[in-house]
Length: 418
Image (cartoon, rainbow, N blue to C red; front, side, top):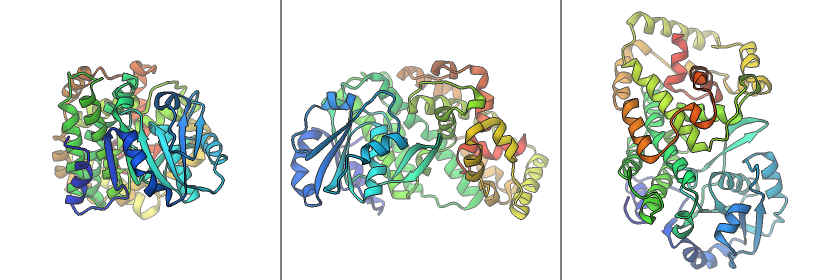
């Protein structure tokens, strides 16, 4: 990946606008100090840390206020948001988030709630949300994507990032490799529904993927490895900003991860997987399902699916009734039932006539064998058992994960063929 400002140049060369105006991956803390006079004209600066990142970064004297959340059991949820908001008194103009995905999502939500600016200071190359304009939150036990505030600037200090636990870097790699699926789902939705799609943005995310795959076998603690990985993650976030949604970076593999994250009681799941770890496992599971299709679905099956799609569109039919949601999602049943109305499948037209185009997209997804070799080269978790879940639960997770978000993916479409 090219030098630090090239990330924004790539976006601007495509005539795309972003809120993020400055990115420094290198001596980030020094760059932040230089930026303080410009930032302070909007009000005071409050630094948001968790207890781990506070220890890793140390004192930042240019901040007007510091808020440290206990890292033990910390999640981007109502409790954490309320605690962070309780420290804001109206004098602040900018939240400076020091951390990985959880702290960044909390800060992004709080900045949106209070009308503040956001500066992101990643402390690990662990997720692709540092530049995003949306936040992944767990509210009332359900994983939801909500509007947030994109950062006006990103300052990453490689002396901190390179010393983060390697597990966090591997999580970031899993998040990036998931783009093989999210890009395919985005293209398929464009083919089947006419959903807005940007080939230049898709190519930028593919650039991020290529950059990361070239790191296989290299020293994961090296500054170059960490910089190129973080650059790829930031580029993915900028793509989400430019599109205005998480579509370029989140598809069926993320829905798989979200189901694991909320672990509805009826499923009896328990996993301490990091976000990128479960995304990686989901990526391999979904890739295997997509590639096994080999684009070959009998014409009569596609025609029957088109009949079912017309019923959904014309009569407001639903794939699953409320009892299905109660049986499988327990306390989350009502919120997920509401989330899936009206069904995103209702926007699909002429599946049989479009299937050849869909099949051509599937051919571009790496085979599960190739992906597995890549995962092995990075030492990533590959199976459900690697993240503490019985491997025999894979089919159930693939079947239920589409209901985590009402977004068209091929995995959701395959529910019609059951």
